[in-house]
Structures are given as structure tokens and as C-alpha cells.
Image (cartoon, rainbow, N blue to C red):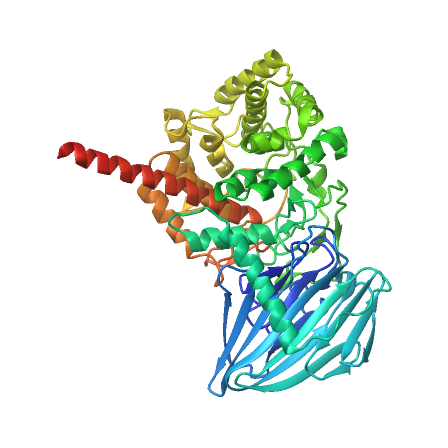
Length: 616
């Protein structure tokens, strides 16, 4: 077991309420329950010695490891190959199909020898509440019961178990065709009976039930483009990162993974950002997942109604998956951090920042939803209209910006652009659905924003729209401009901005979000290229008609996915993945780029075919 395997050396499994990371060595080194944002139970990825882990793998440490997903599912298969034998571990978490909050969450780990003889070792070393809580362990009748304040966990296995201090271990030798299993169950309600002990047959049945669930879900996709593998893996990942009881997606499954090894940019991403979730609506609709899009728009509508954001603003930039707006940030001083990347933070202090762009993303989602949005009825619309009335008077203010900088407020161009989007989409909805609105007021503010951005956000020397007024720094988030319609994708001012971004922020088709040295963000150190921005770059190139570089950049980006098709937040200088993993925004933007590029290539093919017909 490596002390700290590469961030990308993992697959993700989950039950639509929480998730676990499993390394290619068969180690669960991240798992929090009962929710994504709950305290961790296994967190060796943040502290190898203290965090806790669950190993199930061959004792032969010289075996070659391979990992894959069972086709079109979230069932992870880890294979181990050696001259003496070949074995497999499959990991899955049965999703609750009712969509309700559940008190019990189960990680199923099955082992099978497929050739020769393989001796499997098991180590289960839970550390509750980020390794801050003590626990008791009791082993009887093949069930290990771990009790900590507020949570009980059970390890049940077909393998003989024995105590190892406050942990449990075991080992078994399997010959070709033989199967063993270990099931880890977390309960958060006192008095529940332990689950029934697993048998090879019961575990096999549950495995196929999970396979059927995911293959049926993927089968509902209407994507028929050129990259079905990458798009459907991204869709599954988005689904895995969505809290089923509310429809709210988390930004990532993890916390504390660094944007630079040894650096301080280590954040907790297990929350729902208005920005990320809102942009997912269009991607979900493009793939045919209407119910998922509808569920998030309902969650978003509840945020408009609650009006309980920190600081008195109508919306907060992020929430917990149940809509709670309280996300106090603290440092886990007892954790050393991934490869010494300290501090490890839980909670997120950026929640109380002012980021005016979120109103644009929110209204973009509601407008893309259209009929779905209007199901909220008159009172739902009034909540939205009240927010737009506020924005019409409040948009012209400095804020912290889309990247959650901690270097002070500025007049960020993108914040103004998305304020324009909010008012523009509000006007569209009011007109299309004949809803009451202060049309004159919203229109005047929308037009004033456009004029201000083009006058104050434009830099003559750069011949581009820049990150903030009065500056010269480029910002890759502005690549969203043609998608949201602020400028048309082939207008001169936009193409000039695209050229400037290419010259300043693009390196071998990978895109930095901005230059922190030129625009200090209040944090030390640098970061890698931002995978979201690379896919936004592909999207913008395709809309500009630059299809050859767009397709080449998209294909090159696929080579940075990990061995099972997952992306973290960033790519480092040697091609390594950095930041929290996997990141929903990256996979969302992959879907956006793929569908835009597919449409552009299809149009090109039709136009080329028509031109050839005319020549004949």
C-alpha cells in the first residue's frame, strides 16, 4: 500500500448519497458517511497513518494492478495479475431507489480468483470523525461492530476475521472460480439490527442488481455523438456526485486534495455550488435526463424562496446538499495532508463571499429548463422576480469573483456578464410565459451592463475583454461568453478576445484559468491548468468555427483522463491530476464541449455535402 498513491489512481463508487474512492491497489482511502459532506470514516488519502483505510487485495505486492468499470456502470473492478494467479475485486454501493434519505449505507467488496491461486488480505481500519473520535470494536459470529459517537459500522465477511487492536484483519486463499466477500455497512440510527451476513450468492445478486440499475440509467441517454464512452462516463460521474434526496450535485467527492503538491490551496468541495449545478441543467437535458434536471431546478427554486444566504444576499454561492447555508471552515490540524499539502480544511469559508455571477448561472438554468421551471407556479416565479428586482439595483458592485479569490473585491468582468445573463433570461421567461415583471427596469439594467462591460471591461492593448476593470489580466472563464449569448461567437470583439486568451493562457491545448502572479488572489503558490477551462476552450473554438483545433484539443484532453475516465480539477506540468477528485464541473464541461463539437461537426459535414452536390 503506497503512502499516497497519485490522486488519479482511483475509481469512484457511490450510492447517490455518498461515495468512496478505491485505489488501483484495492484500498478504500476515502469514504465519508452518511452523506458526501459527513465526517470521514476512511481518510488515508489525507493522512496515511491517522486517516484510516480499508484494504482488500492480494498479499502478493508484486502483482500487476489493472482497474476498470464494468461497462456502463459505477461498479469498479480492480484486477491483480501475477504468474501464480489472477484475481479481481469488485466494489459497488447499492443505490437507494426510493430517493429518500437513508440511515444505512453499504459498500460491497467481492473477491474472485479467475486463474491459478490467489491469497487475499483484508485490513479494515476505520477512523471516525476525521480520526478525531475514538471507537470500540466487537467481533462475534463473523461480524465486526465498530461503535463511535453517532455512528455504528459493521464489517461482515465470508473470510475469517480477527481483531487487530481496534481494527480487524483477515486472509483467504481462493482458487480459480472461488469467491469471497466483505461488506462494510454504516448506520446512523441507534438500535438497528445488523445486516444479514453476506454469502457468495447474496453478494452476486446485489452486484447484478447494481449493474442493472446503472445500465438501465445509461440506456436512457439520447447521446449519439462521437464520444459515447467519455460522455457516458462523465454522465455517470455527475449522477454519482448528486445527492438523490434533493437533486443537488456536489462539486467533488473529496476535500483537501491539493491544487499544488505541498501547497495551501486545499479546499473542501463536498458542497453544492449554484454555478456548477446550474450549468449542469443544459448538459443533463442534452443527454435526455429530464428528471435529474427538473430535480435540481426544484432545489434551486427552494433557494430563491428561502432567501437565507449569509450576508443578506438573495443567494449564497454554495450550500450543503440539503440546502443548509452554514458551512463554517476549520483546519484539521492533526492531519498532515496529501503528501504534506497543509492545511487540510473542512467546511468552506468562501460560502459568505459575494459572487454576482451566480445569478446569471441560476437564471441560465431556469431558462434552459423552461417548462420545468414554470412548474413552480406563480409563487415560484415571484421569488425569482424579487431576486431580479434586487439584482437590477445591485449588479454594479465589486465582488470576489468566480474563482473565489481571497485578495479583495474587484469589478470582475465575468460577474457583470452573468448579471446581464440573469436579467436577459428573466426577460425571456417573463415574455415567453407571460409572467408579471418590471420589464422596463430589468431591460434598462441589462442594457446598462452590456454598455459598461464593453467600455470598461475592454482593454485596448490586449484587444480583449479582461478579468476586471482597469486591468490587463486575461481570464479563461470568459470563454463562456458565446455560450451564454453575451456576444455572438464570430463577432470581431469576441474572436479578438479568444485570440488573446490563446496567447496568454493556453499551453499545448491546456488552459490556465488566469495568471495569479499578474492578478494576486490572496494565496501563495501556483496551480496547474484548469480542466474546466480547457473544455470551455474547446466549446468556444467550436462555436467560432475553428473545428480542427477544437477537435484536436478535445482529443488531447482525453489523454489526461485517468485509467477509468475520471478527471480531477487540474492538470499539473507532468500531466498529473491535481485537486479534488473527481470534479463534477470538469465532467460537466466535457459533456458541454462534446455536444457543441458534435453539432458543429455535423453541420460542417452537411454543408460540405451540400456544396459538393451543388458542384455536381
